Image (cartoon, rainbow, N blue to C red):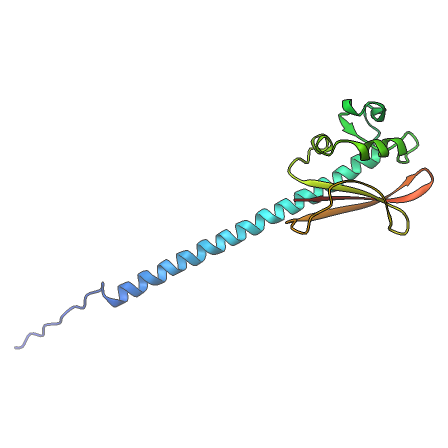
Length: 165
């Protein structure tokens, strides 16, 4: 009888190299996708934080008198900036004091040191009457604006707060 001798092929040849190559490519692909989604998530978190801050700041500025309530007489001692007067309208003296305050101090009081801000007061036609802060640059990564309507005296004005980084 004849015995058949079969030669076993070596596994670690071309097939092995191809499978290792594809594994490395897949790992690199998954890592790059992971990094891409992590960056997008961080951008979304920053944007949502800026939207929330912008809304909260305009809310505090327009609904509260500030602390102390007569802070416009001594702005160095203000702990919470509020622009409302006792009647529910925006106080023009508080608004003017806010606009003239030091930019860095306002950022510290509003707790927005990581961002830049600009606040604009517009008339009914959209013309800027007064502003405070720094214009958002062309190179800004993210820009968020909140617009509210309010009475200053007996005239309706738009209050626009823009946060950017």
